[in-house]
View (spheres, rainbow, N blue to C red):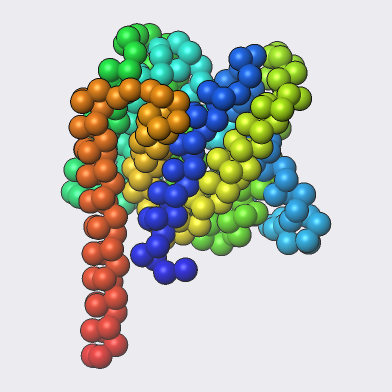
Length: 300
């Protein structure tokens, strides 16, 4: 697959993630957010794992250290994010968790991989985070809970870490094998939580439909696309592009759940689109420059 399409795969993945909020709103009232998170991981990974086993295409030679780190990162993200939202509200919890992830990812790349983020990345990320904040800030009363903020930051760090490690795994391993193994392990790590909360809602019609959508579409398919995009997209850029998730969630809330966005939120959507668009354009420009330099080297 050509490099120019990779950012759009990440965007498509983020769009599918953005449907999770709408699906969760349609779930039975007894569905606890933490259980929904565990269900997403299980239905996103286990069916893929079984399919690959039946086809004999499961890669058992994935590096243990990176695989465990990716699985632990994703397992940590689910409970910390949902706990942050419960403590400090959807607005602050989402903005801090999702908004901090791009910055933390850029810092991790800078410190550990010696890849200094470009100026365009900083501008695009700043615009996107400001836009994300503006989308959510007027949707509910703001509650700044210290523990909630810490949990949101841990969630952001978890997602940034998952993206960085997955970026290494996709270089030498099948994307579908990575999603199958990592998400199955993440579900196993979080499985003790299923004994704490009520699970009967999954047996209901709407519970089954929501679970299948969250697991197969918003997790399995979405993270497969994300992994494919990571082959050619730096982790810091991918995490910034992932801010299309709250954008999708906000728009679906308006068109399908009857929610109302203020003028500030619509301006925030414009900022977010501007930040994401500038990153994509920069990626295309960089790709063209690489091709031109390669061509000039060949001619010489």
